[in-house]
Length: 270
Image 1 (tube, rainbow, N blue to C red):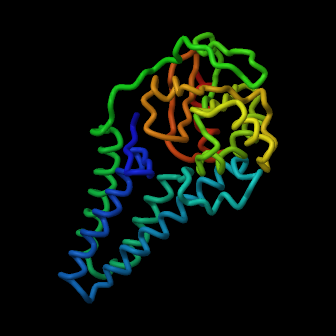
Image 2: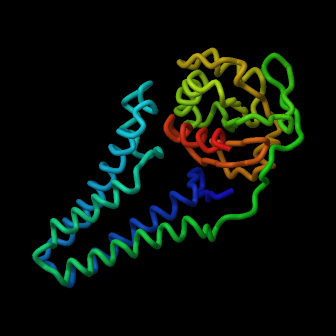
Image 3: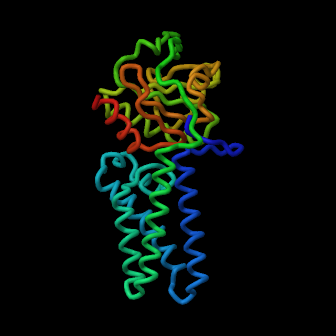
């Protein structure tokens, strides 16, 4: 899948390319700062990053308030997806114009560098040089639920979102309330929480001890991690969105209610 692992840390390649682009942006800004130390370019780069980050988040929240109504504190979870790229770019350009409007030469250099970094990030995200081929359909396997009734995954033709998780996985536990709330709010999309690699006893103990009431009907068991191997998941959590058994969208790592909403739109619009 489109992800890389650094020991226990797992990053989607989309997030990796963003980190690379930000690092390159700051590196270039530092070089310009050393050449023109009196231009305030260090302040420009810092404010461009932080103001763009905040405006991108706030714009996304304003356009998708229902994604945060269950827990408004998650607005501050900046590591989770949920940003408006247009708002972030407009803010970056505005900050640049405000800082350097009296120094036309530096303004041109800074705008050009900003555009190069954004274009490079988008190019890498589109090209995905580290990606590898991955299965695109639900496999013909049957996974049991807690009541021992098996679900044939290949027979699922309706819009379905499959979340691979484990009780030992911190991000899996943090995103569980969003998944449960989304399942309750969105009856036209089926949510399946597939536990990867744990026993029935472990899963039942997790459900009893968890602060969020998780309906057993959402749980499937995959003790031999068949789905993880089928989709070559590099770690947990992984969330996969299907329509008519075909993979339409995927998310690697912790996700939010807003990201689930985006995935649901993609599979219900088809």
